[in-house]
Amino acid sequence: MKTLHQYIQDAQASKTAIGHFNISNVEMLWGAFRAAQSLEVPVIIGVSEGERQFVGVRQCAALVQSIRREYDYPIFLNADHTYSVEKVKEAVDAGFDMVIYDGAKLSFEDNVKNTRECVEYARGKALVEGELGYIGQSSQVLDAIPEGVDLKLGLTTPEQAKMFVEQTGVDLLAPAVGNIHGMMRVGHDPRLEIELIAKIHEASGVPLVLHGGSGTVDEDFVKAIAAGMSIIHISTELRVAFRKALMLSLQENPEEVAPYKYMRDAVNAVEKVAAARLKLFS
Image (cartoon, rainbow, N blue to C red; front, side, top):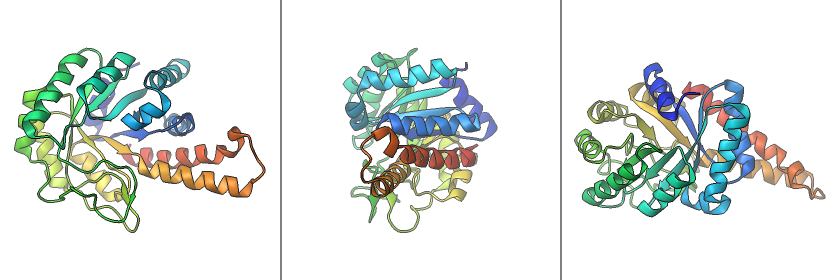
């Protein structure tokens, strides 16, 4: 089986993107995996600090690794949005394939310093992604743009991206290009800055990662991938689908007490959303 790095290189060469799906439990994991398996495409499973705390850091690694071994399938694990060097090291030591150090709210200098330390620690063991430009933190349904997010002044510039990659040595970069975490309750998320994505990709020289994919229009996904996005994060869409399906299942089966029965529809809902996104990304 190829490494995650090789699959990312393949995605770059073919102008496609690998789907990255955040999970909070084993049910969501099965939904995302089955979607990828049905389409025969690689997939990245993401777990934020909160999700890792809920499932267990080493337990997340064990679950994904067991599926990879049993099915001989390219499913990989990412420590999403990690806010301390210590937590990055914890994920690397647990066997994660990839880690994101998120220093987007720090000064440029502190972000570089901490990200570089993460890169040095993870070298040869896991890929490291850096984040440059603040796009919010919460994967929720939103009524307004997240506080602190400036869709114009907060955009990552090609010059910043080039300097950041050169000074940190990151394998991947997540820039702010008009994207936001979470998804708008009404309508679509703000449109992406496609020309800026292309310029950042050229200047940085590394694969780009689009965070906050939920709520983005399909046209922008296609254009962003063509411009240099090689991994796309989807989280809130899965959470919404899971919750709606679970609520409906419980309403329709009020006497059912076996979780494996009333959660089947939630797993299927996650699979449906993930499959639709993977088809688009591929």
